Length: 426
Ligand code: S3P
Image (cartoon, rainbow, N blue to C red):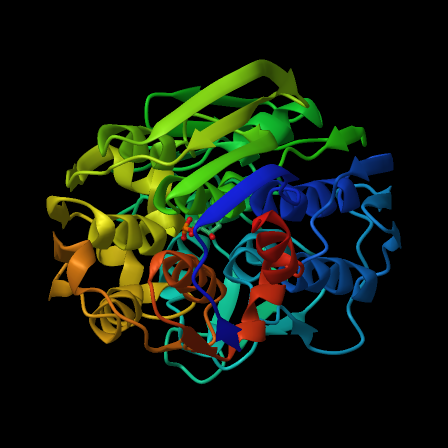
């Protein structure tokens, strides 16, 4: 795909619904009694994978452009799937559904695409096994495909070695089916959408610092969920608004949950002019509109507790750093290696392609900002939606033309991304 330089970017945009919240609304609706109506559902390939897994387990789900109705069958209403469940490219689907499958009275198998089959599942197999689950990596390599057989689950207190909302949520969902309290303690607080939404569906769930506990549950009840716009998708427009010379973009309806808003903190620390307007609460989640204006940026350090709140935004933060004055250090982010691609490699590779001075490290990267050194290039998305979108934004601010290989992978989380970005160029 050809990508062109842009000097002006103006307009108003609403990014699609939050991916993490869309997945959870389908899953929790499916195991609740009654109907769950979801508005502003993300129609990305990952969330469609979650829908197809639950349809395969007998849940009727109507999907009409942005509005989804889940006819839940309660905690014990899922049916044995007729075939292996397919999570596609989605880590959230794979890890969260595993918590539910571990508690079912039927056997099942779960797989995904080539990228999913390389992603670490030991991080969920270990705590699920400690709960008594009968779950195996079929190839015995700690990865999908996974096989589940019925087994009684026991509550555990699990100190998770990683700050991962997918691991935390997997264990909490299994905890719904256990015989006592289940607790997870994380090294750093990860996104808390599961805690907020499961509680609204009627679960007894409490959070204390980085520990979350859940009680086994007799019933969950369906409800209406309005999904806020995804801050991880807004991040590309925030960056475009900051980097393009003459830009002013209003991004409407963005979720700004404090466990997700690290991109705002870091972009502002780099000198970005971002105004929060019209702050409100939607379905228990904080939301606002963001007004972003072109800004000269300087380097910063990104590490510590902020990392889980911006883990998916590190590739676009690295792009901002390449255009900033001075050095940016990204650290404590070894999790980048086990995302849809190894994002330490795929980010630094693309930064180098465009002429940036960058040094990969074991848990991040060090970027020496120098906008004058940047030039047109052929980017490679490595099939990773967030790499494709990050470097499509970089291309806007590079003087020469660029290309992107495998650009279509944005369908995972943002099918209309390129059209919407082009719509803002004036
Ligand atoms: C997600 C959690 C994060 C994030 C992913 C979505 C979720 O993964 O990277 O895109 O919906 O819980 P980890 O929890 O494994 O860090």
